[in-house]
Amino acid sequence: MKSQICETLGIEFPLIAFTHCRDVVVEVSKAGGMGVLGAAGYGPKQLEIELNWIDEHIDGKPYGLDLIVPTTMANKDESASSEDIQAMVPDQHRDYAAGILAQHNIDTADVYDAGSRGAGGFLGEKSAANILDIAFGHPIAMIVNALGVPPAYMLALAKERGIPTGALVGSKHHAIKQAEAGVDMLIVSGTEAGGHCGEVSTMVLVPEVAEAVAKYPDVSILAAGGIVTGRQMAASMAMGADGVWTGSVWLTTQEAETSPAIKEKLLSAGSNQTIRTRSRTGKYSRQVRSPWTDAWELEDAPDPLPMPLQSLVSEPALGKVTKLAEGGHQGAKQLATYWVGQGVGMMTQSLSAKQVVYDFMEDFLAANDRLKGFVDE
Image 1 (spheres, rainbow, N blue to C red):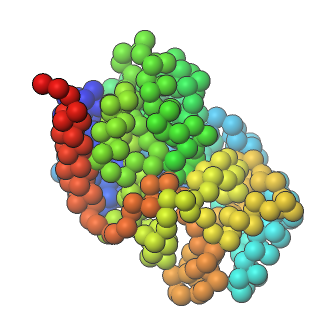
Image 2 (image 1 turned 45 degrees about the vertical axis):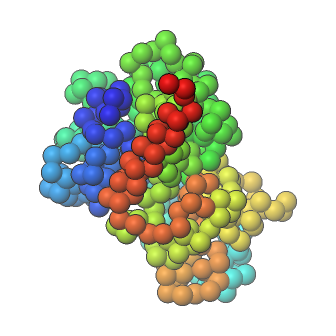
């Protein structure tokens, strides 16, 4: 295709797949799009294992890496110890979360033991630098920062190596800041998106950003937010995007490592069964609605903590919920939730990642032909 994204990344079709599953990365890239591995939660050793596996199976096709290095975070400089960070979480929040589980007949005795504690995959400056050393030791074709302007050292290292950088934006203001900082690709994410998202719809945000950054001709736009079909991809490109960034649609693929209990819930969910809430990470993110998310919206619920502290409350609890749901626990199955966009209502069957790419291509071409039919010859 004649797209700036295809030329920059060396791909056939400007469909980017964000996923935490290395198998999906490989299958999408081999099918003509490009897989991007979400590295949140990986330490240096595990990331090295994942990237080595991708290198061995991807047949030389391009792939990318996505990190979460937030601009604002409670422990951004990593000066506090793990114990200090845990101490910043009020007992009220853990007690409230445990109470939600108890109401659904889940034993909460071990939810917050030492083995369940973590930081939710968000990186401070030192840990991000360690991860970057690993990342740039592999033939990645793109590196992305999911929250805020990428750190200056990330941009500098990428430019030295000729690797395009990307960043998620949810407003025109954010897009301009990223372009001024030297980011190559803007992932323009509307509120329909799963995970962290803003308040403006994809249909409004994409053309608004395209106009705002028109004076930066080297900056490409990837539309994101609820995009699960080729016709939506065609609409996004008609509005000024050079391609699309997708995430939710890969969660229900046959290769995805998504919990079977979560897959089942997503495949049966409607587009109106998601909620945008701060209760999981401390920043607004969209996920499938459940009694867990409803509980955090009640008037007597504690106000979610800043990132990454809220993850220290939510992830241990939801990790146990997911595990029990896989075993058939009815209360856990009700509580189970995961990040997903509003396009979930069109995700009704589990297909191979390769087939999803091919369906995107076919649907895109059909939409293009339909548009041509409206033009008088």
